[in-house]
Amino acid sequence: MAPKPSPAAREEFALPQVASGTSRALSVQRFGLPGARPKAYLQAGLHADELPGMLALRELAQSLRAAAERGEILGEVIVVPVANPIGFAQHHYAHLQGRYETGSAGNFNRGYPDLAAAVAARIDGKLGPDADANVATIRTAMSDSLDEMAPESELEVLRHRLLALAHDADIMLDLHADNQAQVHLYTGTPLWPDARDLAAEIDARAVLLAEISGGNPFDEACSGPWWSLAAANPNHPIPPACLAATVELRSNNDVDETLARDDAAALYRFLVRRGVVAGDAGALPRLHCEATDLTAMQQVKAPVAGLVVYKAQLGDVVRADQVVAEIVDPLGDVTEVRARTEGCLFSRHDQPVAWPGKIIGKIAGTAPLPDRKGKLLSD
Image 1 (cartoon, one colour):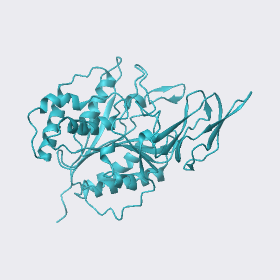
Image 2 (image 1 turned 135 degrees about the vertical axis):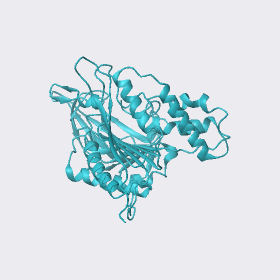
Image 3 (image 1 turned 120 degrees about the vertical axis):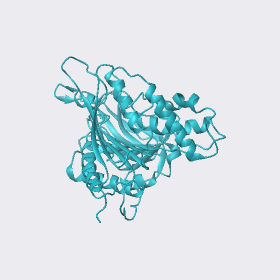
Image 4 (image 1 turned 60 degrees about the vertical axis):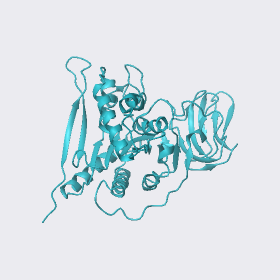
């Protein structure tokens, strides 16, 4: 007897109208029985001008649809290939502007609600010695808190809807891309080395760890409440119940069919390894980097204005005090920009022009840098 197909469906969530005669909606694809475990949530395009993840999730959704027809979805999978229809429609001067909302100048990947603060009173006196029961209690409290929120603006409604879809996931992957970069991963310190299989599958060349990176980005809005609540309730076991990560799929412009299929296949194997989808994932690939603290990542900044001439290639392991780039004033001097740490130059800026303070590269070092405090991400 052929296996019974797994459920598969598509939903549209309308966003508030911002002008008469206009409308936008968030499109969500679901696979497996709602409420089944493990639950995985994957989204792309939250920064709507970071494009490779959208194509990768389109490919992944096709594979999941085929798996659903074979009855192989064991848990629940939610896929949102275009997580930011607001930003995806912001075309200005023949260029897509998808990182910031033009009305408020707000970063689409910052400012999500703090669910730990929202549920603290709800779970008071309800936790016990059973970690699984505590996870269920907290997830219910999170859901109830989200239900009581009343977002008003289009951006607030979008943020609320995305968090409502993802807050109770066992796995949450938010796909992004850098200006010019190798594949790299941001995740919570308490989630390592558990996330090692994810890093190996996607062939990450840098893994950056932090409990709080600043600004409450989407991945930390999903995972951070678990270690925050654990710290606030030391007498009750609360595990890090959501493996959340920001996955940076190379460069913004790396929209390539072969790369997208490879990325989708890697994500699919990861879901198989985690028991979300049936199948054989094969041997785990070798991880080509070690995880390092986000405070050890140097943001290479230009000290002056001019043209950027890189002296180190993407992926080079540079030494402390090595010249990474030169800033050339077309009318004057040449200024050297040096590494302040040893590590992999995993990111560069694709527009070779600089002004004072512009980030022109990122180096994954191992030793924390004294100036890396507060907000650790570039806004």
